[in-house]
Structure formats: C-alpha cells, structure tokens
Length: 269
Image (cartoon, rainbow, N blue to C red; front, side, top):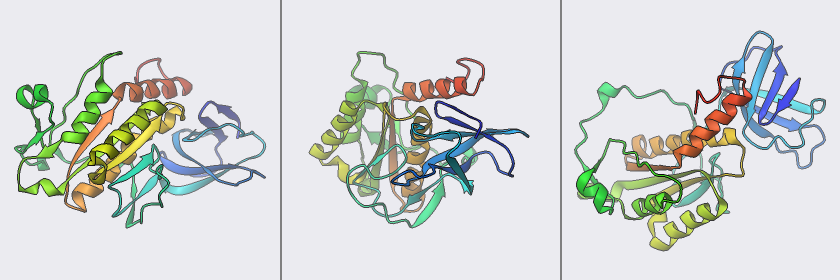
C-alpha cells in the first residue's frame, strides 16, 4: 500500500490482476478480523487503485493486507429474496439469515441485446392517476420521475411500490425490487415501515443504502439490486418492477469518486 485517499486504496503493482476484480482488505491484528470488500477500478503498470466499499477508518499503510479474489464482485441469489430488507451490499439488514445461495452472480452482468426484447404491451397500474392516465408505465419500459428538493418524491416512490400491480392473470407472479440510494436513516425506516404496514413487503425485496455509508457503495447498490431483479425475472419467471430512488445521489457519488481518481471534475456526475 502506498496511499489511502478517502475510499481509495493505492497499491504498488506486483501481481497480475484485472479491472473489476474483487478484493478483500483487512488489518493485521484487527479484532474481529472481518475483511472489507473492495474492487479494482483502475490500474497501470505501476499502480493498482482499489475502491473500498466499506469504511477505510483504521486502515494503515504498514498493517493493511490485501487479497485478490480472481473474479468480479458476486452476490448470492436464491429463493427467499422476497420479503427481505438488505443493505446496499446485498447483506441482510432485517436481522434474518443470509439468503440461501442457489447461485453466485456477478453484479456487472452483460447487457441484454435490445433486438431480443419483446414489444412492450402489458399495462402496470401504479395507483398514481397522473402516471396511469397520461404517461402509462408499460412492462418492459423505463419511466423517469423528475423532482426537486422539498417535493415528496420519496412518498411518490413508496406509493408506487405499495399499489403497483399487473391487470391480467399473471398478477400473482408480480414482484418489486425497491432500491434506496444514499437515503437518510429516517427515510430508510419510513420505506421499511410503510411496506410492512401495507403488506407489500411480502412480494418485495428492499435494498437500502444509507447516506452515512461510503460513496463507492452507493455505486454498487443499483447493480446488486438489479442482479437480484434479473434472478427473479429470468430464473423464477416473475414480472419485476424495479424502483430506484434517488438517482441524484448516485450521480453525486459518481462525481465524488471521480474527483478522488483525479478525473475531469463533474464529468461523470
């Protein structure tokens, strides 16, 4: 290790590694010895840059140990995702056991060929009349909602999650993946309580990344959640509605990490 700058750990390169490879970081003599998760985001002939996805507090240049996993960051998927609340890294945050791993999927899966997409036809009723009547959400499409400070976009997102449904015979196969990116603790608790009170949590998987957590973790939360959504869709055969809030926090995290890398200011965000 040569330098630690916020969430970034700079290493002198003396091994063959690849971009995106998973990394385990821990401190010698630390108790309990729980490795921090990271990934390689930049490298050249002399330097390896690791984004540590957890706090770098307590890491020292002379007592830090790094283990390269030889594969990209992966997360467990399997039956039991629905009805659970996870943190931004896909670890249980509701006090329950880990998900029984049917498979370990890389979180940066290949993009789908758009030519293979079916023609969107099925109407998803959100319960929000302004959306359902004037800008309908169709299964297979994306719908952005633009908001500003002081407007109730969080309440709108949770209302969509509580009331969204398919209006055909396949409604029983409907699932929701709700993703909170960089939200406050109060907002995260509000999301969880609202879903529990309405009974919608039973067919929902929630991924909540808090504003107090490291910014690189904010960049991985949507990828972890979409990995779970793809499993529910392609392996369990469900129709999945993914709700992500707030993408502004995601862009700010991109900008913050980009600045740490010394890239052009604001280009990423």
